[in-house]
Image 1 (cartoon, rainbow, N blue to C red):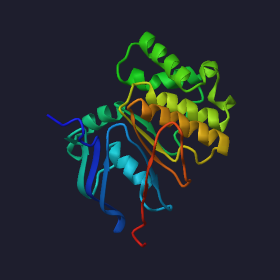
Image 2 (image 1 turned 180 degrees about the vertical axis):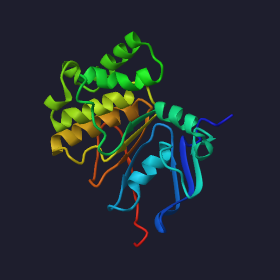
Image 3 (image 1 turned 30 degrees about the vertical axis):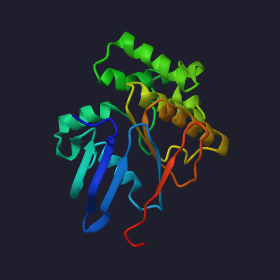
Length: 221
């Protein structure tokens, strides 16, 4: 049985290479339960690759990926799909489906996890409330501002009550005010015990929760 103070997430001696190009080499990362961690680094340092590894969307060339004590790099495709359903994932350029309302978009991860429609709708409404955009339930994504779209994506990410939120560059296209609002909201989730891992080019702070910042280097540095 795992100790309560054991890390939720560990990357051990991770290497990733594509066509003889090394993106990550001997990376080690440990994130505790309920921690708010921000990854910094120049383009090409591997931030997005790290998120894809944790979400089971890519496999490492070498190394171990451990979540809640399990070696997820040894999972099969079906196990990785269920792993992603237990996470709140906001990957770069993730978009909302334009032919559905905001509420219907947010319901999707719950429905994918075999939650009944009535319960999925209830969870989606709660997620909208938590993210402060309940009034947008019936709106179409095309009518939303950039900040509102990111809040809707966050609501979609937290509908299944994840223990881990992955947010890759969530504030890149936001103005200062909306960026701070989103970071503060993520801090609120972290303070409530959810582990939050984000990537950003910007220096971020939040009064809602202390952050640990990690700077990644490119292989050439």
